[in-house]
Length: 166
Image (cartoon, rainbow, N blue to C red; front, side, top):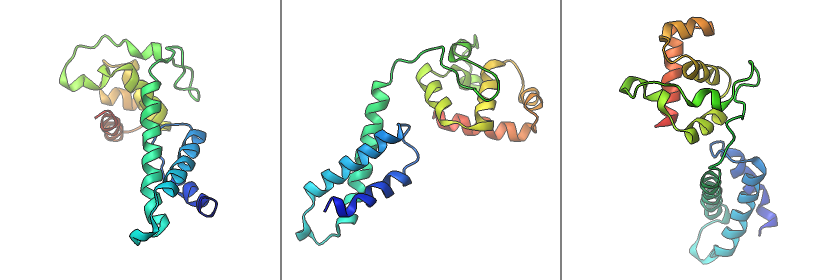
């Protein structure tokens, strides 16, 4: 049953883009979920195996992602986050010296959140985050001008970044 449905594990793995874990770990978790589903499957319940197995595989992948997040507490402040546009290190961005006001809560994120966010963001979102953390005193208009975009677009991207932190 496992060999017949190995493609199902690959399908579920391919559909899950969110969990921030390595692809090999995600594939391994998907295969483990398939084995777990095969062991727990009861054909007398009237379900198809694939209907039963997909949630089991998905839950195993999510569990693996939670475990990886728990175990990934230690990082280097020398880890680079912007290789394509000059080199900025996490240590450069952690200490911002901003007062703790509601409108500047984005700048007071924890190191864990910053690392997870920097891995999740791509392209222009990562550039906006870098600009926000590098120049917290700048207005959105100043940051947008430096990035070569409109203020409204920069504002939408900041809002999207804040939604990742909630």
